[in-house]
Length: 376
Image (cartoon, rainbow, N blue to C red; front, side, top):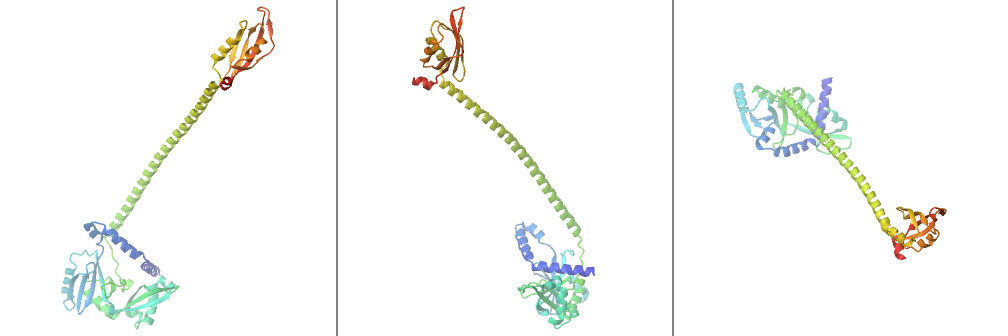
């Protein structure tokens, strides 16, 4: 039961594969890629299984090479079996038995083809469903024929599938199988030859009679394939590691450049602040007269009987004078006409100094800006 289920699943997969556009695309793509290879390598890649077409015509068995369509031998069926075997062995000389595939090719005139329109559910097991239709679609019973189905190329109605049923009577096929078996040619499949020397792409040989090959090179190929996959994984892993390392290095460079950019921004901000402060000081110095000009103006305007103990000039242009004079109150009028000073006024109380007979005072004023001084 399990074997039957597996066979049905395999047939379902084969039918779905044949109906899909992938086989044609892969054949085209493979051909395009193979054409780019050097001649010797292209020949090695294209070698594959060496399929021999077996046919019978007018009492003569023909052996043809599918790859080149060349006829390798024509063996008469009336020859002794040992002679037939020897001729068949000679025809297969130079062909590796592991690569050799024997396919019986029957003319299209010896088979019967029917087009079946079945419900879509039939695609799950088309060969089994078609077997029930043989009695209705052909003059034979299912046990009297070899048959196979393939996905039809005609469009199917919605919810249906088109199948091509191809039937060959056992009365025609079995004698051929016996004759080829007698000459040492174990047929591995049966296909139908069309008028343009192409095959229908079916296998009329029942699945139970299809030989199971043991490919001695399959294990080696599997090991090579596994090694290729492993190498590909290692290469990709190494490539990813290199990309990660390069990304980490780039990230470190970016972080370093970001730090330098931040430092540069800080220095630029400090420089801008220093320039602003410098411009402010230059502007203030340009607006206020130099201290020597203030001192010169005071020297010219203060009377000879005035004596200064302290003179303070701050950055804002404020002037603070402390000293002694015969008439301290008169100093306000004296300095009021100055082109350098403005708003002179006494600060605090005038105190007489008994020792000198003069008046002690504290006077404050403001230095005129350069523009104001020039205007006066």
